[in-house]
Image (tube, rainbow, N blue to C red; front, side):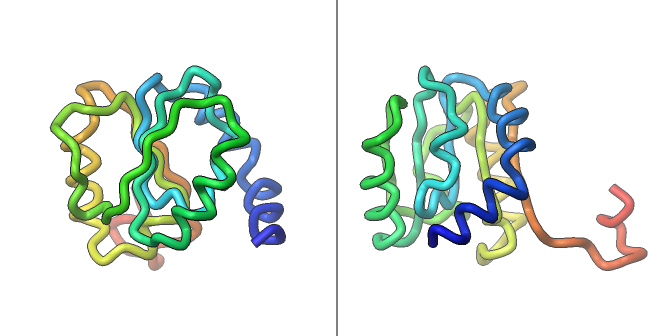
Length: 137
C-alpha cells in the first residue's frame, strides 16, 4: 500500500492541496480507505469518514491517530449515507465513484447531505468514451 500511496501523492498531491485548502470546516469523505487524504486536511477540519470495509477502516483509524483533526467514523455505503440533509460543508471522494454500485445514487446522496452552496471535491481516474455526452462536459 505504501507504493500506491506514494503514487497517489505524486500524481494528485498538488491538486489535492489546492482543492482541500478550499474545503469547509465540516467535511464528509466517502470511501475513506486507508486514509491517503489525511495529510491534506486543515487542522481545524471536522472530518466524518464513511467506508464499507472494516479492514480499510482499521488501517484508517491507525493512521488517523497521527493527524490533528477531529475525526468520526461510520461503516457504510455511499449509496445510502446515514446523515441528515444539509449536514456537511464539503464532501470528498477520491477514486471512489468508479467502484461503487451506483454512481448516480452516490451523487444524489452527496447532493442531499451537502449544505446549500456546499462543495463536492472528487478525483477520478476514468475517462468517458469519446463522443459521449459526458466527454463534452
